[in-house]
Each structure stands twice: as C-alpha cells, then as structure tokens.
Image (cartoon, rainbow, N blue to C red; front, side, top):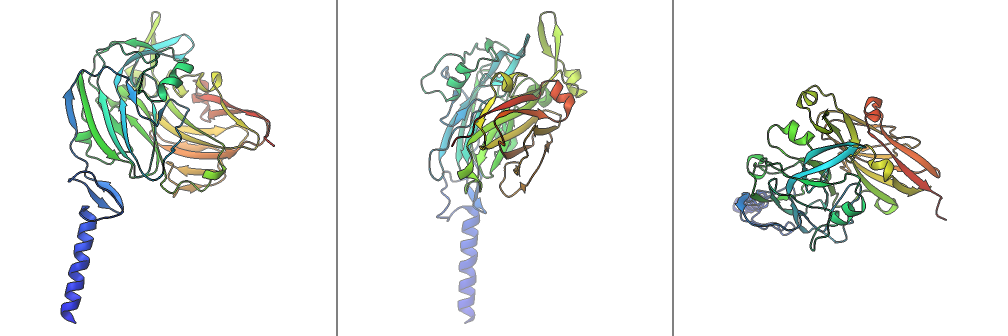
Length: 382
C-alpha cells in the first residue's frame, strides 16, 4: 500500500511539474523550447531579434489591424498566430483646424493602429525604425493591413511624411514578457522582432518606452490592442455596433506658423488639446453611427500620457461596463467611467431614441480642449 501511495504521489508530482514547465500539456500548444505553461497561460518567449534589413514595404501589416474607431472582426475559431508589423516613423499630422505638428508615430497615424486578437492568440511582431525615411501611408499597398484603406477614406489628420531620426521602442501592455528584452530601443535603420501571447483579455495600451517616455508618448506614439475574451462577453449576440476610442493629451506651443511639442507643459500636465482618436474633430466630422434600440459597445482607452478621463455619453447610461475590458470585472448602470492614464474599459449602452448623442470627457476642462464627439442614431430597424 505504501509503495502504491509513493508511486501515485511521484506520478502526480511529475504531471504537475510537466504542466508547469510546458513539457506536457495537450490543451496548450507550445512553439519554442523556452516556453512553459502556468494556469493555461504561455510564458517564456524566445529572445527578441534586432537586425538591419532593406525592407521598404507597407509600414502596417496584419489582417486584424485597423484605424480607430474601427475594430476588425475575428472571423476565425479558436486561437491564431498573427504576423503584425507596425513600423515607426514621423508624419506631420493635423490635430485641430490649423494646428499641425511633426508627430512620432507607429504606422503613421495618431493614435497608432488598433490590433484585435483573441485571448490565447500569439503575436509575431516586427517593427523597423524608419525615422530617416519619408514614409507615405496614403497610397494602397499590396499585403497591407485594412488600416490603409481606412486612412485613405479618413484624411482628417492630413498625413504628410517627415524625416526625424530618433531611437524608438515598442511597449505592449498586452504582452507578458521581459521588458528589457522585448521592449528594447532600436536605432534608425534597425528592426526588432519578438513574440508575445495575449494571455489576458482586455483593452490595452501600447506606447514607445524610450526615454523620455512622457515625450515619446505625447509626441504620438501610442495605440490600442483589444484582446477579446476566449469565451466572449455575455452580450456578444446582442451587440449591433462596436467601436474603439482612444483619449489622449497633446502639449503643443505655436512657433511662427507651426506647432512644436512643449515639454514644460507636459511636465506641468497643462495640455493644449485633449482629443478622442487624435483630432478635436475626429468624432464630430466622422461621428459614430447606430440606430435607435441598438446595443453599442465601445472599447475606451485613456492613453494619457498623464491625465484622467471621465467618459460619458450624454443621454445614455452604461448598463454594462467591464473594467480594463476583462469580463470578470463587471459594473452595472454607470453614468461615467473614471480612467487613469493607460487604463481602459469596455462599455455598452442601449441607444434609447433616434437623435444625436454627445461623447465627452465629463472633466469639462478637457471636453473644452477637444475631448468630445458624437454618435448619430438613425430610426429603429423594424
């Protein structure tokens, strides 16, 4: 009997050890010898690669990469490996009528592209520092992400290529990796390549992690990753419209006929503009659309870099709110959602009537600086 117990205990320990190290786990596929599994989540990605190449193709690549407020539909079952590229370079962008500046960008827009994946998906990411090149994003590219067509139909930012050599990096809040390795800074002309697993559902910020992080983020290097829950949200079969909104601050001062970044204002948290989706008119010139009676879902990210947001839809109540976009963090019947810098929420509301619904940061000083927009609701579909 004792020998049986010892054998059973040894077997249990072996199975437990194997599951934790990723040696044996039939339900979680591993790709590299370095990987292991804890609680069904994959860790231990291989080291990042940094190299030089002559790549000059589309700066944004990925079947599920879009421009705000669009979110790509996940038209596959289970989990998938995504090959994603977001090159970094400068663009002159407009952020308010008559106000343009030379932004540092991921992929050419401010905010950068939206990546949509499912919890458990693998992302193979590449980024080239093309800050010494004039990179055009307003012409079609074969093999480019859906993002490109959306940029072409929404030229509110009036993108113009600019050369501004600068070291940059990428920090995905959605990735669970060693930051000193995957988020390494690369020089102009270098490419970084690494992998990460979307281990946790939610809406996550990405940004440049090169010092000064405040400056690089305020200059335009930020965006959103939406990681849909593996089992979905409880209202998935009821949602009629789904959007992404990213709030952020700009710190610009006028120099002659142009505008430049003001680091003193950024340190003092005194923004010149606070915007939804990169422009004071982004969601008024191009309002969100729905119909009376629709259930609308918004993945809302406050990218900061330093301020808070109190997101509110005038005339509606958020009947479902998932803090950070995680379905385990559920709130009900909220009038506003308070978010610190880099925090997010996935909110849903019913459009009660046909009409115009203003979207605002209810911290009204920020709304008057530009954090406002609208949703236009048409008649109820019978």
